[in-house]
Image (tube, rainbow, N blue to C red):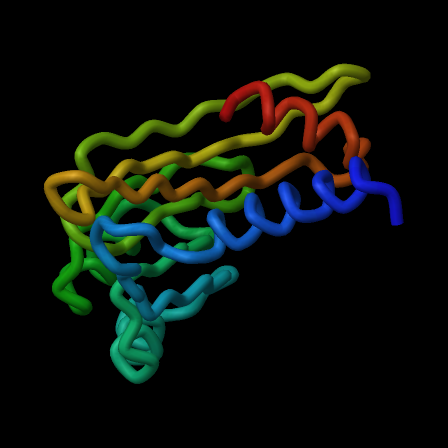
Length: 154
């Protein structure tokens, strides 16, 4: 192996190790998380029971329900509701602590179609934040266009 190649490999290894190893700062925070599509016609108490059974601190919730249903699930689980954001036949919401802010947007994609993003920002501690995104695209959209549009949003 040539000297330059060895130095390049050593530099790459140092970069990977440096990124993988926590060099000071606060440790990782674990969040038991549940992503749930409740569909249509499921009672709020059934969804709340499942959330409590799993012990989720963060819930990404989709459902074909109105805002009162989402509010009832939040109340039954004693979590703050972010959303619901209208995503066509389904609405998207998060259940967790109190968000710093949240929004729901419908964005167009190249070549047609649209997708909806529900985005909420949470404070983890005084120096860290958690940004949650849930998306829903129209059926039949081009996956590459969807990913490009999502990356432009982010």
